[in-house]
Length: 136
Ligand code: SF4
Ligand code: SF4
Image (cartoon, rainbow, N blue to C red; front, side):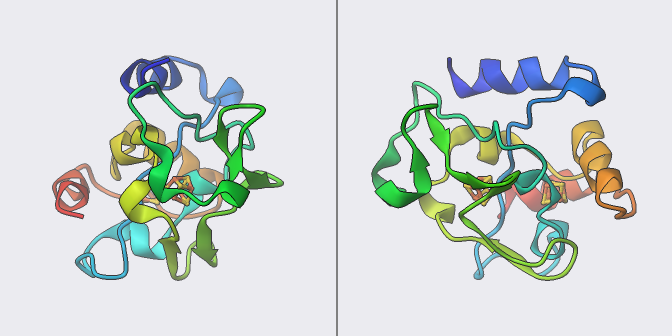
């Protein structure tokens, strides 16, 4: 399934049945103003994420981080194995440059973002942060 369709499906699904489609975490070189560097909630919300889309080129993702049977990133519990750091503290994506499209399309400050943040006890953030994410 193309990543964009998967993401739309995710947004249209009630929160209590979400299949998380992940996010795009900034790399360590990303602007420090991005809230994602101190969050990571959407990378640790569900073991069914992030699924690979038809457009994804997986060259940048090590084989041991791929769940080939399910066509998605491998998870430890609900947490993507590429997530480095502590949720709500300091995090980064170990495969940022080659991350799946669903991760790139998950933007901070959206309704989905804030619902996942609340799940981890983090405060909501404003939609204005979307612009920051686009620059990450
Ligand atoms: S701020 Fe939103 S998009 Fe960024 S890591 Fe947290 S939940 Fe994901
Ligand atoms: S690949 Fe990176 S951005 Fe995507 S869910 Fe895993 S840690 Fe998050």
